[in-house]
Image 1 (cartoon, rainbow, N blue to C red):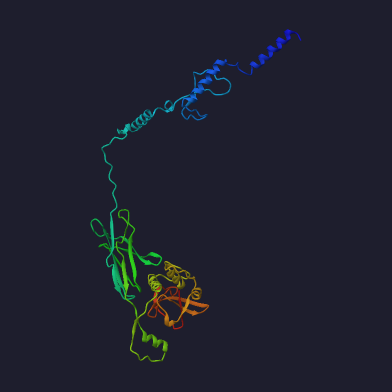
Image 2 (image 1 turned 90 degrees about the vertical axis):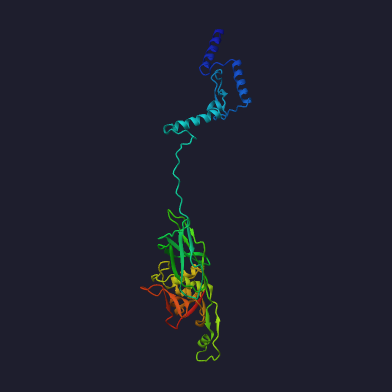
Length: 366
């Protein structure tokens, strides 16, 4: 190949490379750009690729970028968003501008006081006869007074909830409405010492309240005639000894069961009902004992099978009276003493206290 051909071939290769790659920059320019970048890294300004932590922007004064790496120069955060003082001033200015139409400057007193919020009236509630002593099942009125605590004026036509203390805690059993004198009451009958209190849920204008005191209804010990009991057990045997009376303690749970049953008086009998607004006979028994923390079966036969058998002559208030025969118990009531029981009798009737009308019955105890 001639020397001329070799020269033409070399010129073609150089021209071809020029179409795909720019001419290399002078070494001095590249060195100057790298030195500037190194200075930025060592003067405390940090540039993070993609995120300007202290501020990072393209240096328009740098030489044209060589190769593929970006050329950046440090820009301080203050330069990007302003100094702290400038920033605060900008925010204040914006706030003043925003409220300028109303003539109010940020932080300046307007001279117009907002109307005060009206608070609820503080309410007082108390039991009017907190300590009474009665005979078992003797009626006694328990009263409650609701009043404005600041002025002591009565609060009329307000709903007061009455609660009784059970082994499981306080339970609401009655709702009363105060009269024009802020007074409400109900008639209680108890068989054992009982604690009662009241609460007021409040209204939009009245604060809620709890009675500042509780009522304690103390029951005098019951007395039974031992001679009469011996006569019942002995049949025709005559007891010639003098009549002797001794106190007989009643079951606390049993007495409370009677009391809770009495609170259901007047509620209708509905077959299969378990309360609290209606009952059948076994539903009433189950409901009452559930309030005392005892879980009883649902049906009369199941309740009879689960109870402890007790002689008719040893029955106490709170024992269960079962009518029928084992496997076919058709009725049950809660013995209240004095030959009577609380029952939900039949369709068309209501929960009531009635005499045990037959001598053929079983007694069960829980």
